Image (cartoon, rainbow, N blue to C red; front, top):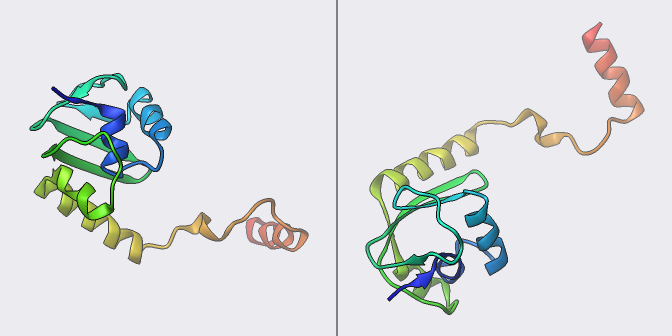
Length: 123
């Protein structure tokens, strides 16, 4: 007996809505035991999931099954994150904290002032 992979991802709080979880599974962002499943594929205890959500990546082993979304402390009991995944996520978090993204300050189209500065810079 198992639970649909999209329901499990929603119940484990990896995605805010079940439709987002279903879209991620359909889009190939989720790997179940190394292969790309369909949203209706069942997850069983002991299965390994590789989850990509934006810049975040998790490798988890299913520890429990639930079809209902509950509080976050209960959702954390549904899976166990692998040591490699945890180390990679913490390293990525530190990298994001100390690295500055050049495009982070750009919002929308450049203003006339911005264009003049770009023209002066580029020659």
